Length: 116
Length: 111
Image 1 (cartoon, rainbow over the protein chains, first blue to last red):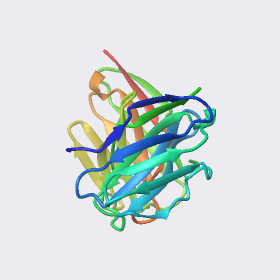
Image 2: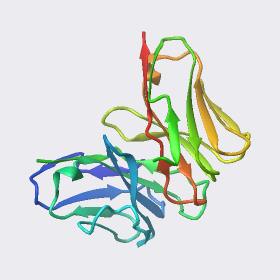
Image 3: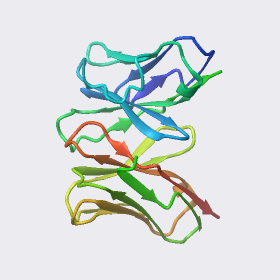
């Protein structure tokens, strides 16, 4: 596709359930990033991938959060045993490569997660 | 993030007026990105600045990075309702990779 796509666009779940969020980056982009945007915390980095490897997971808030990327393309962010504080908009971005600072990150529309 | 401060937090201007949004870093940047976000949507890339003293323009929006590469300003000339939204600056401190974002500036333009 032309841009970064994310699914679902909205997800409502009950506390304690697991959720999976999907990101489909721009074709040919080797770097993929997950961010979280919430009212109190602004836009925060979670994890990035270069290819299928995740060299920087420093932003994942707890071990309930995990992410994987397969085939150097689609990525899935999984949140286990969701808590109300996990409610936020989860944004995915991709760029051509990680190692060059001139590579702009292009963002998807986000997944709005609501934990009841 | 305390590393990157945006001001003002919100701004209401009359259509046709000029405005400036500032983004100040506590340390030297490798790159500074400006994005715009409308409610419920993702971030739209506006401009990226890398070199001290650099200035870029797109339509009625101009962004500058100061010589010391620690502050950037975004200037909108003759604002229009279509400029309304949240403007976010993002800092690259690692010469590539994750961005650290400011808290955003919410802009409203009154017709």
